[in-house]
Amino acid sequence: MISKSFVFCALLIFSVFYKNNSLGQTLNASDATPVIGDKYVVNSLDHSFDTLQTGTSVIWDYSNLVPDNIDTFVAQSTIGSVFPNTDIRFVNPQTGIAHYFNTDATFLEYAGKDDNGSITTYPNPDRLLIFPMQLNSSFIDSIYLAPISSVMLKIGYVDNKLDGIGTLILPSGTYTNAYRIKSSYYLKDSSIGAPSSTPFYYVTLRWYVSGIHYPIAYSKGYGNLVTPLFEYLSNITTSIEEHQVDKISIYPNPCTDLLNINSMDALISAVEIINISGVKIFEKCSTNTGKLQIDCSNLAKGFYILRLHSKNGVYDLKLLIH
Image 1 (cartoon, rainbow, N blue to C red):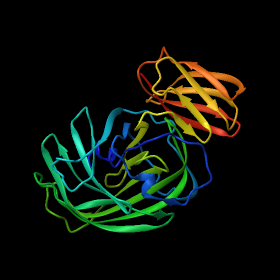
Image 2 (image 1 turned 90 degrees about the vertical axis):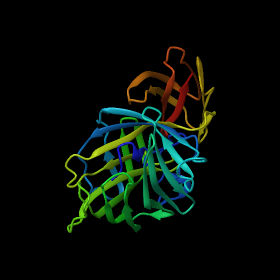
Image 3 (image 1 turned 180 degrees about the horizontal axis):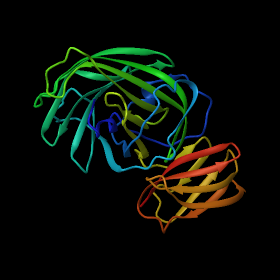
């Protein structure tokens, strides 16, 4: 469907990881629409997955996945760009590739990409989401994907369905109330350009979490889905401010030496710090206290997940070390 760097677009994300809550039922624009400043790291790997895990209270466990590639994406303004009618783009600083999107309160769609001057425009953009979406709701979008400088031609439609709400377990953490969108593509296509008489079918999956902009994970199927590419976001941030989950706050953030943790909700029993590859690099047990101070001066600069354990659950917060 879309290049590997896309669903980083199709991928993207913000804010804190949050406490377990009761099961939600609606995916809204505020849950999944990216904003300028979003920044995240994408891990890629080959993984066979089960497209039939649907319904409520599903557990998608990818905790043992090991990334084979890491890319960073940043959401930027499209002002003065080659796609003037779009309102946001995701740029990969390593490759220079930019993916462009149209967004508003009712939909999110992929319009095209700029690969260092090689422009791909979709005359009929691929509509990824229609808001609001509820469990088992679906929409069909016709597709005409004809890259300007390529012989590849795709004509057909995609059936998008919010087919599951449950728990998504990734190396970067566990996310409850994750929404899965299953997109089934039916296209007349061929690798050499001429549309075939037999539709080409493939499936992609995307997981969204309320309060995080863009998919927290996604897959890209190819034909029979034998070896689809699975990608997940291991750390995401936008503005760097003091974070508060319910009544838990951490400061200063960014941090250079001492990090303060205050909890007015539940007493903290343990603290972990996890790097962007999902590796635990720090762990400290506490005596169920509401206030903690951690020395971060030995940590390398970059983004981390601060995981707090309490009797009320596990809290994941973003942390930047300067």
